[in-house]
Image 1 (cartoon, rainbow, N blue to C red):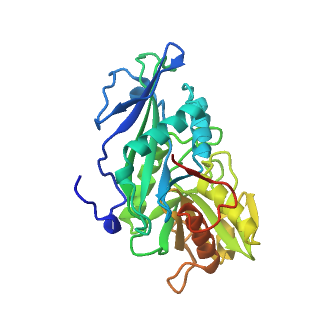
Image 2: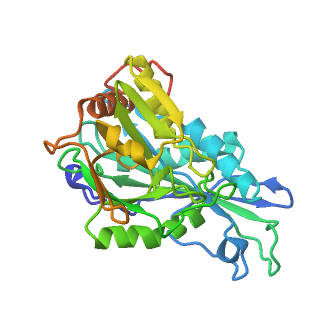
Length: 339
């Protein structure tokens, strides 16, 4: 392969050598198969195309300074994919099959794992969709599970920088008791109108409010929200928020650093009381928020007034990234060496 410029990788798709595929048919999962194709054959009546039976995950593998490749909390991704599958009535992928596919695809593409110190990582995308043909609205009888990988650069190539966000009231990402807690493609499709509007207005992303009352913070586009005040890490609790593995990890890290944590409804008005705010997820780990603009209420909530991320945000970010890269003790048992 051509030598990749590891320090200047985009956060985007780069072709690798192999992916793993597995079929569910007649009530059973088959054996994982290796493919070198970037394309899939799919029936024109597949439920994944017509009725939204599709879920996915995103996680990363890291090269340590000891030359070992480590996965971050893969079991949490396996469990969340099982939850998502149940939420839209798909056949769940057993955790053992999930693990086998991950390890196999990483080992087959080891040369694409960015070197230690490059700031880059191997992004892993497990995908599950209804591949069985149905014309009536009902669950498919066949499903396909695919795992592909691509090396990605850091989300913030020139160092972690605050971003600005806009509150959106005219689009709902997900309804209460709907699919918001599941990692399904429909939630992301539903967010695109607001995201495109925010970006056209010069903002990095949009902040969604709860769909019922428009009183509480829900999500930051495709990420979870958190705010910091009085040495407390506060993140919204809602029946329509995706359970972010990064957010869960930051809550644990905050506790280990003597920072109090609260997961509860966060009213919009509370934004004015935070000393720091951010969005968290697999891609960026943490995106510090510089300011939040509420056009409808003519309000601006400012953080990072010196243009730099806040001290608590950076403390949390640095510890999580150090654990992921193998530079700090894995006190929580989150990392798994890929043999």
